[in-house]
Image (cartoon, rainbow, N blue to C red):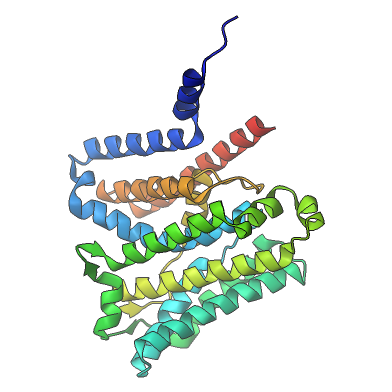
Length: 322
């Protein structure tokens, strides 16, 4: 029997790898929506719109990716983003300098992440339940601190943060890509990244290796909420106001993108490079539906179906690994 040579094996690995499948799905999505929208889907302005939308969700995706690799999840980022957008707007309206206002809001986001980690690590609550509770709490606080009304901002530097450009590239996209690249290297090339995979893949082996899983997860919860706060600031800058009803379903989109990108819900498997493709698939899908004027309630149904598809792929991948 003939055995495949090295070149054949390499070709099969490239053609049938998980990331190749994701790229194929992304290309197929682009072709379908380009045809259905008469080419408008791949127009320059629409591509920029997709990138900007991806930047806001992508902030949260970074943290959710790390969390899911450790077999945890955070459902509070949407509420944290809304709370942060309102808070930064109130601070700016009160005369607080932009830099200080951003630091205060990001610090408050880190505090939310620390609270989530305490609920999970000390009170031993399931991550789903603990972050579901904080999701409700901070969404309510977002309404309370602004009286349920939008807080408009006229600070030009703040508005540039959300809608300004550098050499034609939107500032939110630059912030997102720099953050993504930095944390991609950390996950793939550092001891901290290896510890993340070990905690998610084999908690017993991680403990025997001297890794403090609770401390590591606390850092990741804080990172996730910190990114949610930063995303909320950028969103408020884009909208020229902090609004308590914004970012609903943000965590839903983030989890969908992460699972689509190949991160196992059971933990221990995944990469930020794959998740980036998953993010573009999800945002392209959402954008394509809007361009086709699909009613909003059917868009909600479609996003739910997309999550089911992502979870189905996750189940199939886990079966193959076993």
